[in-house]
Length: 419
Image (cartoon, rainbow, N blue to C red):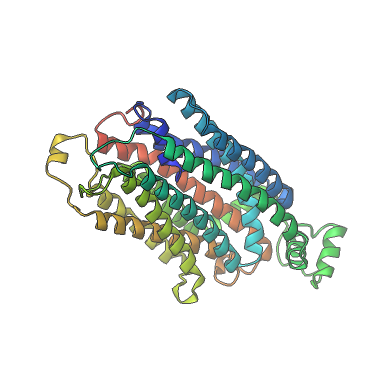
């Protein structure tokens, strides 16, 4: 939804909603995601992960198809905004249950599988933002950088393509999920996880015996689900704060503030500049998540990851020193401190790399029995640790989205909720 922002803004051209749309979209999605994820996390042990994945994918495919159809409709700005926000809430709800199921299963296969999940998310964003860049280049062909492009047709065509591809991709994902659950390796790993959750039942003992584990070897005290989640949350609090704060910083400025940065070169069109900046962030995010597959670059220490997360705060003032369109005459007249389009794109790239790297390492380390001594080798804690960390990640997204209103107020010197 964030990467599709240029399309949404093209449909709000000339409307007072355009300036606040990004913050409202981020806030509506992340708060809804947080609320639904709270329920999904606390009920994760009671639900079938396979059923959750297939149901969520089906609902997401329907919502994506609705967005595809929206490219042919032209309602008023208010109606279009309401439609997008409601669609975002629906995606947040479905995504919450999908995310908990995927993370719970991936965590049982170890850090490598978790890293692949994180990288896969970023890879999709790179593909979509790449389409946006091509669309922007097509829309400004033969137009000088000083001219404003009011025709939204190229953006609509681009949106039709990537929303259509998203719908098709989700259908393929459903087929792949059904194939995955039929694999012997999947059945073996999931059986071990199920056995730990059902130790006091005949079925649980049978599963333990099938996986080669002595049913009488019960190294942990049976807990009710709520207390189990709370215990893991307290145990992994440093990892959880670290991954949450990563996205507090990211959503505070991207895209509500970064999209307001204008090119300093008269040869660069603002529409292309905006699209490229999304692409650079997603390339950086994908790179950061991908390098987590290199053992030499692993950082498992919770305190070190928290330090790296907190250091990302420095990006906020750095972005404000770029060519942001300040409302204050005094701020805009003295010119930007960072007066280079290349440097801005480099900063966006590093911002993305740090986002992907730190968040992925937190998600890999929190549920790892091999690298997180706080879990004390308790296999039954792995999927819970992963889903709690995932919940904290979304909490950071929600807090960052709300914080973006405050950062925007500094920039526009206005009421950020209406201007």
